[in-house]
Length: 167
Ligand code: SF4
Ligand code: SF4
Image 1 (cartoon, rainbow, N blue to C red):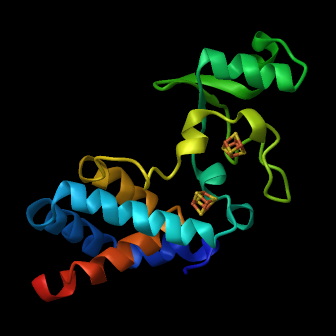
Image 2: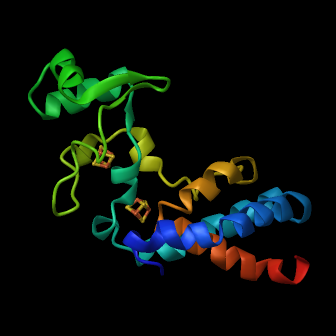
């Protein structure tokens, strides 16, 4: 598996190939079969992966919080919702998101200060276990430059689908 600090440069080397692979999947892959393959690889790779030694997603993305998630996290930190928002969040097109990167809740040991009530976007990332992966291939290609597991899933899928014989 590519190391977290190397995933961006590794993905830049295969960026064009990943976009070609996306087009290949759109033409040749069955959407439900693609979902099954993503789910199998997601389970297999994350079962062995220690995310606390990576945390690229917490460094590269700004997590967004719903009003309900703000209330829960504020309570955890013994703050009011408005104190929480003023201290940690800024308005953006997604609603309210962490105001700077890396995430203000990311600790030096890779743990999250609001782990027990982290927002849905953090719980769900990188979405490789969800359905309709065919419709999300563009954002997954983007994630392959951040998340070592997504990068590895793409590399394995290229082999599984015999992609290199079709270029
Ligand atoms: S809230 Fe926690 S899991 Fe989400 S980005 Fe911040 S540190 Fe990472
Ligand atoms: S989900 Fe991906 S990017 Fe985030 S910590 Fe785990 S391996 Fe790293």
